Image 1 (cartoon, rainbow, N blue to C red):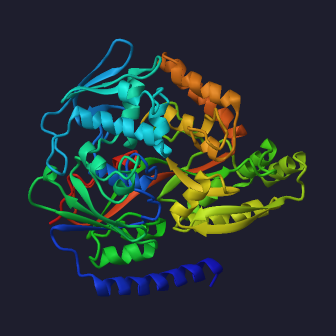
Image 2: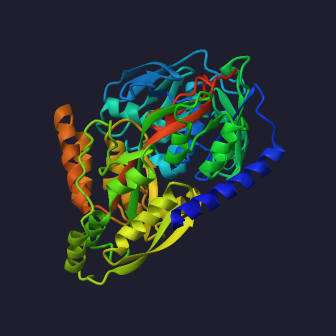
Image 3: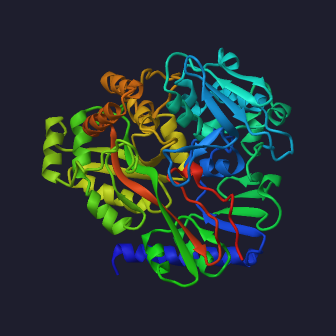
Length: 530
């Protein structure tokens, strides 16, 4: 038995005992309850104006509405959500007319005052996703004047300077554009936190589900709101189950209705099985290596290129993630306008060693790699460890819960980190800004992008990204993004490895689950089961 077989056997045994303990405490799922096994450890907050993780965004999507949202099948097309219609104002702002029938879970009507408060709240709190709105010139000082309710159903959004109204709409479709109930937030505010402390573990939205409880790294329970209507499923229980083997066992025995994090091996085991259905959708999530250029070795472009040339991308995908990911090496996901899909880098140890020597590090160096502790990240981290060891780079492995790794990278305390990143809206700027723009690298910078998190400040990349955003000719704009991606691959401290495919493994009869290109738009709004 080789080492991997032993580890898989040990993992299966642990999953069996963990599963039996869980099964002893829970009966099979009732008709009115949907139980989902899912890795929930990246959730740090359920306040939609603070959270910036894929799972938290998905949960928020089921509790909140935005003014507009992407079409479920054609994400480049925006549909009205709370907005019944909209028009461009003189000067490029947007005037929205809200639906008259929209209600919060409390029963209170959704008003333009709630919408103005919500957008201004996101700007004022200035949490991780706020830059999606503040790039339009909104600030704590001007938010009330430029995000205003004209009457109960009319909202005006007036950015500073010239911006494409279409681009503004895309940004408002991001999770940070969620509309919350103003009265509920102010009633639970502590000091000047605008209800943030309360909303982290509660909800105040107008979506089909409301939060009943959230226990970090344990569970989240959603209750149907009046907006969902009567009958059918009334409660969703999201259970944190780290091990995909445990998720599969629970799915097979009926203890859960859906498993969300199966690996290639578990997906293969279900293919063609009559009692199950596999829903699959390519998503906009990228798996990547982040390299903090505050580390002396990683500050050298040649070292970062050496790392990119040392990795066996094809082997990692084929052997560890064949049914969950595909090789992708640029910052725009496949399927996005302007995405570069060719693979520039391949495993070439000789070339990688030559680049290390050019950087004055022919003997290599030692460095810490933080990575998520849920599969497939540990296996991929081990593959990276072997690939980099072949050129003299020795990785100290440091696994952690998803939110632990995220917290560390957000505070720039990592050296290297194996993580994932998902797009927020369907426009090239969503990732161009995140990975290229860093106008202020100081510790108190307002826009703490991925470039900022890795201490990487390239004035030319920032300028080119902003120029592409401002370009009004569609064909020219995409050409600018394509050139930017190719140069970014060579210079940046990011090694993009894989693009994900979302799978929801469902027991037969579970219907109405909707998977989207962006995780923020995965939905249980129409879910049902026999």
